[in-house]
Picture 1 (cartoon, one colour):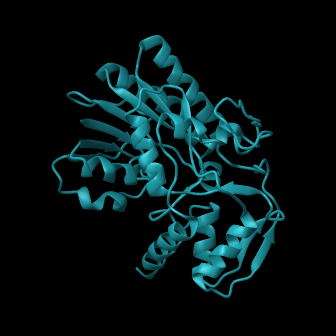
Picture 2: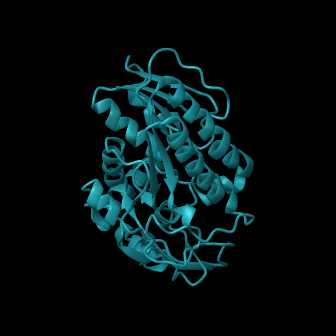
Length: 311
């Protein structure tokens, strides 16, 4: 296939491009590099099946020849990023998704949207099934990301219903692994960076808010199966094993064998109290579930961070 990938220089996008290239597909990657890193794609620079376009997806997209699949990964994805770039975050979720869908329509291509568990907001239901409509504050500081992704889902299904585009929507829960940015701002990279530097690990609130963490290789397999499936409605992809942020901090202190202490900070506005996916639909329809244990995934991630911090 010939696959067009937005946001392909980012954490998840670059790992998915690895899979596509390993399967001998032709890939065109578009990224404006606001939060992406071209080094994530360095091994493909001289590959004739790979093309990189440095461009904002909110600008008109022009690609010659046929395209079989459009994968829309572009977007700032951590609170640090979308609080720094609130308007670009809204634009990539709205104008960017519209442009990516327009390309899929013009090329008669299939389309996959990388959505997020943040469409559920601060959930009143746990675990969160795809049928749950969410509890989102549209005008809070996190609303720029939450509502951008909710709009992206709405326009994706509108194109499916109105233009018969074969669309897929992945609601991605907390994912971690090698290539995450040290300054990403989310719990896993924050804690690992702080631990390796011997700094206090910053835990917000009382640390009893919960998350579930899916290793990147598991997510990539889930996305691949969704991409090849007949499903058009949203599908949760994540690890249902729930733990508190304080437990995660303590685990990373143990795994890194650092002497860091916990430093407490005020809880950010609208920070979700629980985040745990109901993956029964993915298990039933995609025959998919995560298989990488947390300790194993964290070990691989810590070693990647340790190596990059020495460079």
